[in-house]
Image 1: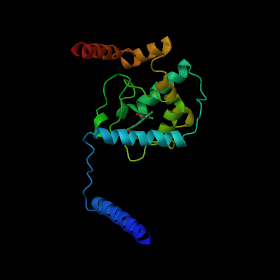
Image 2: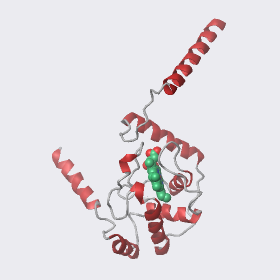
Image 3: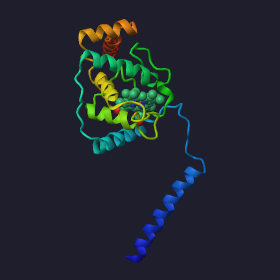
Image 4: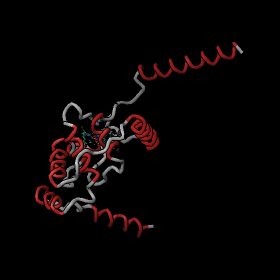
Length: 190
Ligand code: HEC
């Protein structure tokens, strides 16, 4: 029994040393200009989601979705997030696929997570990715305003939709029709 245990421990130590050696001898790739393999994304995103589920406080948005708060959210999003996550002008961000993992387009494909989850992501960032933490740069209020915008993208009041059109030269639902068309096309092909 003692010998068996010793064997297990020695095997584990060898495996750990081999892992460290593999990394320190330069076998791990560093380029960010490639797409992560499917299994890696699946595994990593599963781990990120599970960690947030465990750590993020179930906070509720202290602000009400007034026109003013939503419009503030648009300004804050444009200044701080659009560069990586795509703008309200519906043009894809030039940096979107320059990250490993890539930065999702939050306007054409808004997160369907609860607000506490999105708020926590914004406040604390995501380690070992291009997603910064914003707690040192933005006030809690401003982070809640951005969170609110992202969770209300498909149900903006008419005045806020007008504001969007006026300031970004494109209707809030533009591009969504295209998505419908694409879906239809895909459907037709099958
Ligand atoms: C410098 C580039 C950059 C900036 C600026 C940036 N992000 Fe990110 N963000 C990323 C990247 C890259 C990821 C993907 C991380 C991952 O998949 O692990 C990400 C992920 C996210 C996610 C998680 C999406 C998901 O699929 O769960 C949210 C939400 C988010 N960002 C919101 C924001 C908001 C809001 C802002 C502005 C306050 C912002 N980000 C600014 C690069 C950025």
